[in-house]
Image 1 (cartoon, rainbow, N blue to C red):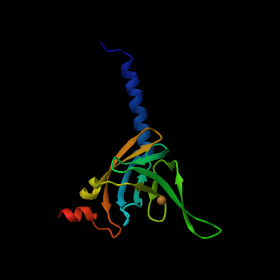
Image 2 (cartoon, rainbow, N blue to C red):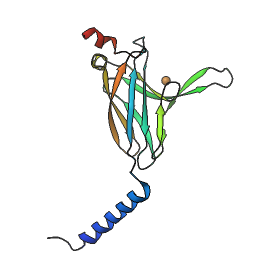
Image 3 (tube, protein in one colour):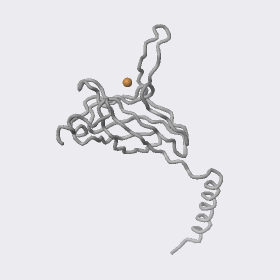
Length: 160
Ligand SMILES: [Cu+2]
C-alpha cells in the first residue's frame, strides 16, 4: 500500500532539483580526461602520468591514483628551489579539485609517477588506472601509453 506521505515528499524533491538545475545550469560531473602515460626510456625509472581532472558538483580532494599494472604510484608537484634554481619534485598526499574547475596534471607541473609498469599496458598500448576522491568516488580511467617520442610502446611495436 502506498503511504500518502510519498507524493508531497517526491514533489518537494523534484521542485528542489528543478530549482538547482535552472539556477546553476548543467550540473558539473567529476571526471578525468586526456590521460596519457609516458614510459621512461629507462625501464627502472618511473613513468609519468598526465591528465586533466574536471571538478564535479562539490569540492573534493584527489587522494590517490593507482593502477593494477604498476607497483607504486605517487602524486608530485614541481617547484623551483629559490636558492639554487634547481627544479625539484615534492610528493602530494592530496590535491584540491574545486567544483566545476579543471585541474591539470601536465608536463612541468603536477603529475603522477608510476614505478614498475608491467608488460600488460606496454603490449596493449593502454593502461587501467583508478582515481580515488575524498567523497569516496572512484573513477576508472583507461589511458593511452606512449614512449617519450609519443609513439606506441616498444613492446606493442614488436608485436606488429
Ligand atoms: Cu615526479
